[in-house]
Image (tube, rainbow, N blue to C red; front, top):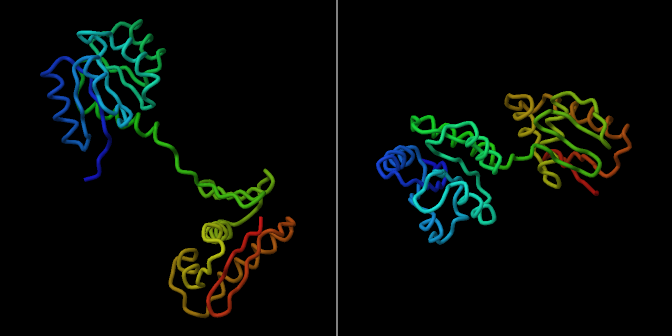
Length: 228
């Protein structure tokens, strides 16, 4: 199974730590457990972790102070995990920069859900945009922008342009374009893709975009070239 994350648990309650580690490891977390600030300092590569769960009441240092010590060493999210349930403690922990504050006792499944939520937020979002000079194609919005303005394209016109832009300078066979855009196998006669490309070319020409050309390669398909 795919590993969810590499996680550091800083917790001095050993029975509780064992329970949490067992549950998280059963759910694809690679967990390292330490029980004091001194043990944190002894870790060889603390930058390896995707997320840190930190108790506040440790035997040798406050979790709040430990967090301050770690801020220059780690970039991953930190969740405070503590029995301190007063509002002032929660506010202080969050204002320090922790991404969450989980009060004990907590169901391990709830803790895992909070971990997953923070991992989703911390992961870089994959861009759905392609840029060709002054043209920006946003696949998520199915929208083409030219010099910041929206260009009117049908969904099929956009999808053809986006697919060709992703593979510019490569010949895309007509049957592959037909299957991906129209959604059925090409019969060798249907001119739907040719008509879509023809309309799209006219719209690009009307904008005055001369850095992009879409050529029919005889017997092979179409190729988008970009000279920007």
